Image (tube, rainbow, N blue to C red; front, side, top):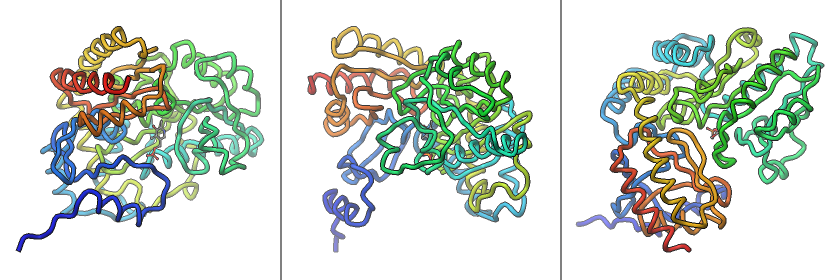
Amino acid sequence: MIEQEKTRETWIAEGEQAFYKTYNRFPVVFQRGQGLYLYDTEDQEYLDFYAGIAVNALGYGDPEYTEYLKAQAEKLLHVSNYFYNTPSIEAGKKLIAVSGMEKVFFTNSGTEAVEGAIKIARRYAYNKTGGENYEIIAMKNSFHGRSTGALAVTGNDHYRDPFQPLMPGIRFAEFNDLGSVKALFSEKTCGVILETVQGEGGIYPATREFLEGIRSLCDQYDALMILDEIQCGMGRTGEMFAWQHYGAKPDVMTVAKALGNGVPVGAFLARGKAASAMVPGDHGTTYGGNPFVCAAASKVLDIFQSRKLTAHVKEMGEYLWQRLEEAAATYKEILGHRGMGLMQGLEFSIPVGPIVSNALLEQKLVLISAGTNIIRFVPPLVIEKKDVDEMMKRLTRAIEASL
Ligand SMILES: *Cc1c(COP(=O)(O)O)cnc(C)c1O
């Protein structure tokens, strides 16, 4: 007897029945991945230039990575942070080596890394003045996560308004406008948080003047500079961390997304005066830094070194830039092209929803938007020129079909 395969429609109906509805999903059910391609329940093949929101840096099914995870799954998954475990020590040492930071705390997500960073700033203020200098400067158009703390520093009213009042003491400046940051700085400021390259907000890299200016202001006021590298870090821009393109080093940094290549692991890192602001009892997590997720992070960091991935990203980033410039020259609806390395965006004069949807459903190309008018390109970091060419073919057809 042949077992009846469940149709895509049935899967989707069952999912909708089960899930708390906070997402409008595309009508595609993915079942497996290989290399740069995803396969749905009907075994249709999709080229992935989205990487699960800049997560799957190595693409799908990388043999070296997968074998390592399998071996760790057989050894040990979890023990809690009341004990040491070898993969977390290895991953921690490697992350410190590539970031030039001093201390690391592993989290389960990007949001939790941001929470930890906020707590460092608040604890630093508490140590200094009993907490009188509790203000944190954040940026408009930013994204730092969905917990109430991370939301409090996220500059997007659409996400914030239904959950007000959020944590007090947060003031919002204009990204890339140093004057607006300066105007908010005072003796009450304990930290500044920003993405080195704004991701969800539409792929806006910080200018050199802005990032280095914030560093000077933080030094002047003894405030902590917190860089959120959750999306732009882990090689995405062609350096291990985006701030390494600039002459400014953060006191606190957050990482997640590509750190585990799909296994949920994030981290916050700190150095100097920030590295000892919190003390035993101030912060904790049950799962965070467990042997399984840290084996993933450890292997990912090894692969970055052995395959020289940042150099590869620089080369592929330039090629993607060149090809997207051609598109920008062809279509008058493309107003702008921004980004660094394999984190680029095309801004359109029209909403990009129809293009993204046509790309996915008709051209079998997985893309993501950022805001209503921007298409975001955050492919796996292991792409080759031929993959960029294939993506351009499909993208062009999707644009033509939507204009
Ligand atoms: C995705 C993202 C987050 C939140 O990470 P989660 O893992 O979804 O909690 C925070 N900051 C930035 C810049 C991000 O891109």
